[in-house]
Length: 139
Image 1 (cartoon, rainbow, N blue to C red):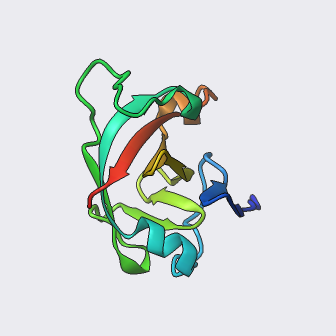
Image 2: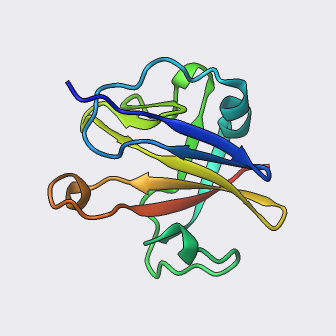
Image 3: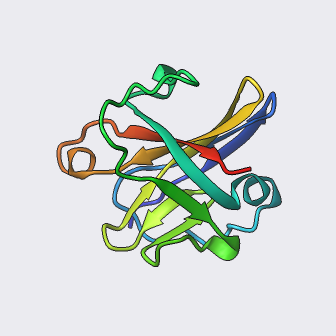
């Protein structure tokens, strides 16, 4: 059995979540944490796809093609817009792949952006670092 830890910290208005991105069991039902839920619940739409979080520049799309993930909707009680994805403060769990993607919400300027790891076979099989979808919350 693999044990995994979760670190959530709030610093200068930025919520950080550090959690495993490898194959994992479904995260515990701890998705009602008010600080995380209040930030996440709602529809987010993709604005970019970056190799590293630090590569993101608001207003400049570095990904040259169409973004595969167009949007992501976080609903109460760990639900999402897709039946195979659930969420908790541990991350976004994919029930088919049995992977948990970490996420980070960052405030850049006056805007909040969600950085969501994109877990592919390059990550789970080849051991590469994940890239990130950058999403902005619908207002």
